[in-house]
Amino acid sequence: MSDPYAPLREKMVTEQLVARGIRDERLLAAMRKIPRHLFVPEHQVDKAYTDNALPIGYGVTISQPLMVAAMTELLNVGPGMKALEIGAGSGYQAAILAELGAEVVTIEKIEPVAEMARRNLSDLGYDVKVVVGDGSLGWPEDAPYDRIIFTASAPSVPERYIDQLAAFGRIVGPVGSRQSQELIALDKSSTGETVMTYHGGCMFIPMVGKGAWPEGTEPPSFPEDE
Image (cartoon, rainbow, N blue to C red; front, side, top):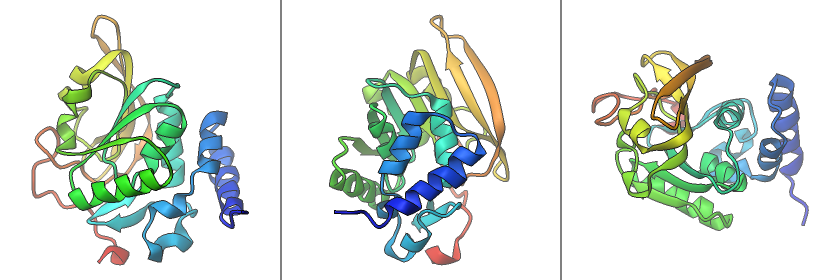
């Protein structure tokens, strides 16, 4: 059966990603394939392939396609790598990592959101471990990880992530104030030393937890999410 959303995905990839510098062909193929409209609420389906972050409920968002692509390209995931995602959301980022061949663990603080991710990923046949917990502390049970990606902002890279990162591993995520952040990549050497590089400004909702912003930090409100 033909997919009526396939032309919209192709347009998204061509006009939003390739035109703005995304070059990883495996990543572009994954984003052409994965039905982003199945990871947003029904009332947002008509916006699924637009150049925007969208609210998915509970103060949580699905990131702008370009930001998903930029972070994933920077993460440089290869087949067989073990990847930890902080902030499952509706499961879209985890699906992309799984499509790229990673063994994925994704952690989500809000149980109904985690259940949404489980359902979406299972419906599409992706074998991803979705767990509930304080993502700012990582997930030591399955460490070490070759790659860690966090999709909510933190004042700095949580130390637990560095502890749970394998030698020659990489962490990608937004670091800065609650008002604006910088996308960073942190690489860990065989001796445990780390090097951080900076890859442009971004804006994410805050990561709330023991290893990031304190409880009570409120994410921005979206009218569609009320």
